[in-house]
Length: 328
Image (cartoon, rainbow, N blue to C red; front, side, top):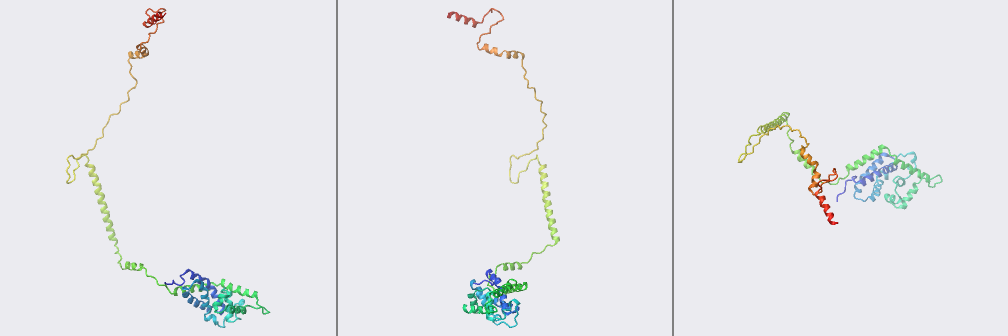
């Protein structure tokens, strides 16, 4: 299985970014020289990145601080170092005591991990740490001075100058550029691009040729339009004549078409009167229609009451009177 490229792993890049400031401050206050500390951190990082690829993340802090503490610049620092006024307690310590103190207050390691970094027992490390602790006038450990040292070192870590931060950024970029690269399969895209480059580019057309193509196309369009217009005129003028049959087709009764003339119709007549014409004789009969219908049905004639005794009583009345007499 092939290892991934150093610092392309997000976890490894985040670890380097989170530890680089503390490493630079620890190296600077251990040696007392800025340039020597920068070289020591660069050496430790270049040795750590390739080895960390094959190691679990839990072992990265131990591996890195062990590499940094084992550099010659930190094990045997020169005597020309310079320290700030609030950290003048550091140059009075031995190299081992100063490194043990900086791993505690600068790197933030606990006693067990710091002892593994220095390659010693926890009791021995605690003894070095007690020897590096500031003392008061009575020779007792000064807790307030201890807190002052720790706060001063942590302030240097937080307030790193922009120049130092830019230098650390350049160091990370150099780790990416010089780290071992994982073998990658060559993609097929460059091959296709090479084939396209081998093909000759299409020949460019001159402006004269382009104008000729445009004129030719315009002439063709004009010919098509003229043919369509002439055919429409011929079809209009040939109305009313016999249409010839297509070649090879015999038609017994050819269809003839002719234009219909518009007929001039007379104007519509005025509507006649709807009033009926009634004959005077029929009008008189219509007035006696009810009476005539009653007589036709066999009803008795009405009695003429203009005379006191009618001369000729109606036959129906005579018959009615005779029937009454017989009954009596």
